[in-house]
Image (cartoon, rainbow, N blue to C red; front, side, top):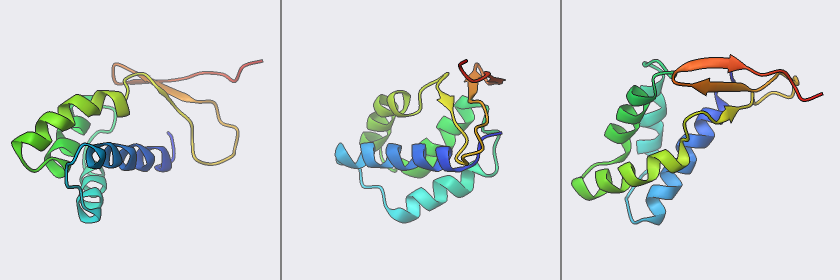
Length: 105
């Protein structure tokens, strides 16, 4: 399973992208989002999306902007490399199923 750093990086990139569109996302909003993600199945993309939407988008305009940005920042099927330098193969999540790919030879 990947270390939490890639997840934290994606949440922060999502928050930054929302801020660039004028959505007010505070540090406490990001902390709340990460804490809430600790209580859900991270392989369930729709649940992750709903948790992030509920914690980062506080009004209808913010929700619209979140919906437009989420898919670009948290892409389905992107490989997530562990944060440690243990040379573990990347984990690729497709439709909620993690698959480990061997390193390129």
